[in-house]
Image (cartoon, rainbow, N blue to C red):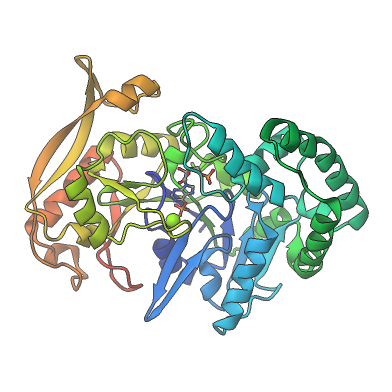
Length: 423
Ligand code: IMO
Ligand code: MG
């Protein structure tokens, strides 16, 4: 069985926890897009782990983790993550971690450019500053440096020279910066190359062979549907396909081999960074939910914006993503609320929108239409059986299911591994 887990909102839906639970029963876990902009949190007892590039299943010994070709790999960030785990007693071996030979490498100039371009924009995106956009841009403009290039000193040298020749002019003339020194980048990166070499292989072959040998594979999505470069709230998006389509191009595994798509959504909505957000709370309510839900970015520490559950968005994500099952995360965060609102459509200039409007003007100014439901006003964290949830909580979940049109299989009611209801 090959499963995909994606986020259906603006990221941070709780994919890390869901993947950690599901990975118990799979052999291989694959990241296929994004980079160290992701922050996937897994809590095991008193231990709190945040993964940026490593698949969340790295905590499970005996399982293989793959960083696919669609990921942009910052070697510095990756090695820091590997070293950080080592300090905590978890050793990441080349048997356990495979990195795609054709994945693209994040370079120092990508990170710097991310910040400089952001400063120059009138409409800031609020990027994580990890160099993700500039690295994907180089991939598409065909001047990127891949893992395989990094592993070959001669090729690396000439590609880096080529890049700096052009980029340093750009840094000097457009941004009034001094540019990058070839030797210091080269010397820094050949050390990374030496350390990463044992992990690098053709992961498309590796994963397809695993599938042929009846191994089960879990594809771990990063970010969420509305940060997708094609289907998201462009330009306030990330630079990869966060929707299911990204699996095939980002791992080399054909869509015909995917058996099940599970989407994670929060019982409400959050967003980090800039961009429109129709169901965003008023400041007081936002503060309350942010505190209860610990809504601070796990990559940048930024306060997440919070709002009501928006079924217009999730319904669209379900259409584009072909979801088989939904996982509702953090339902317990709503425990104390007297009433809970659910957005069912948008209204703009007298017109009703049932589907996500791509027109920026509409999406920015549309007024959400809500149904209001009574809250359950009691803690639900110890419940493990759906039938034992308070009737108001069941009604809320059933209403979400009806509005999105996808069966809800998992309901998370706490941050611990076992705090989940499986229907
Ligand atoms: P996980 O995997 C939430 C957001 C940034 C910014 C936009 C573009 O933890 O769900 P980028 O650095 O990618 O160019 O930034 O995307 N963003 C995320 N928001 N969760 C994430 O990942 C995100 N990764 C990027 O805040 O608005
Ligand atoms: Mg996150």
